[in-house]
Length: 276
Image 1 (tube, rainbow, N blue to C red):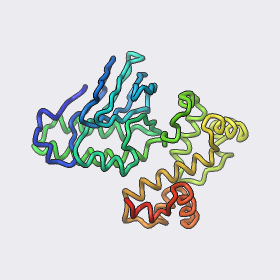
Image 2: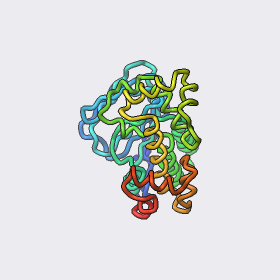
Image 3: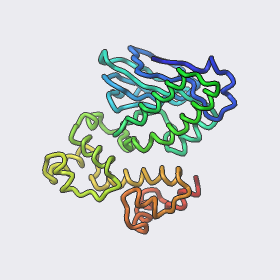
Image 4: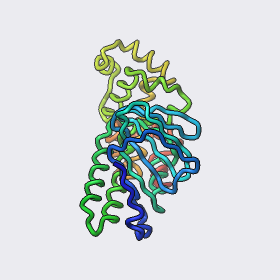
């Protein structure tokens, strides 16, 4: 079901962040827009398979895949299986782009989630609030949307590093299983022997396969995942010390974490935080 809220609450424009639509178990068959829309759309697939085309780039969208559409972006949707179902939050307001830019998600594109429960839970919560229609609905939805936006990057694979690579990566179940393992356990001490045992293959084979498909080693991927989460935590939690951020991202030595962070980002964790 797709619910548009904008026409019911015209005074929402005073809010810095406004929820203008909610989709729960939405089932589009085919859709296209040439000029895009004035709001942001964030979709996540519940079931089935479909296709999205953004700037002439086509991507297959199945369970745990989603896409963010920024205002004014032309795109088209096409159902590939009859059970294709999407959840969506449509939002706008002067704070929307600022929040997304700080989260490193200011461009339209496809994202892949290693855990989609948070997304679906937020959509369900907002939909239930809409059904209850409290007098403060616009403000309450705005607060939930803010929490929703801040929380999602924690569960998204860092797909920006996959740009230009073959979509076959997403079809290689072993590579995806390795990525899921790294994303869900990046705070722990991960060994290649344990990872190989988890996927039921030899260490030599998974290292060779991953390097072939991803153009980088498993260790490098783990570093990118950890530093990606560190960037999010540095922006979301200015009250936490660098040593705390390091430990939350799997680094027991804050000094070593600082060196790795600077190598990846070109600046120290403290410099990165102050700029933002």
